[in-house]
Length: 230
Image (cartoon, helix red, strand yellow):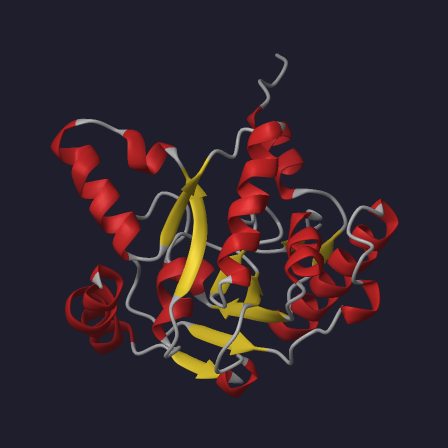
């Protein structure tokens, strides 16, 4: 209920009025049933504008840290993130990653839409980076299509360090659903998972027009954060 209040009454109308987002290919999103919306990730507001142009609810997997902070600030975060379709998961790796996967599959098997960013983190420089195979496992285990979603212009709207986005019109471009039914039952095959993930990233590259870099974005960020000698 609060999700729809945020989208239709509180936050949504304000974002539509101020930023006037445009969308293409909305008809590619299934009208019912589970599906993964796999997007490029340029900045924080991607998760606000993508669901805004759809009639259906979109759930995202969010860091559990957003839901565990104490005090008034923590309460406000829980209300905000919960009200914007975020589901808390532990993303620390290992068994936590498996639990997050199970949560995602449950959302999809319930017949809902799941938004996910295969790169695993925001792009450090606006380019498109190698996708992580979790998105492929989710699609094959839940047996749902994957709709590629390209966010257009949001990197310029909210560059690193900027809290309030610039007054620009963001775009959301939805591609044709990708059907991976030929791989059902093969979700434990790492070669299949990599092939599926690469196909998703190729579709995103074509849809967004971004330059593709075949390394993980997290690795690039970690290297940039290393102290420089001298």
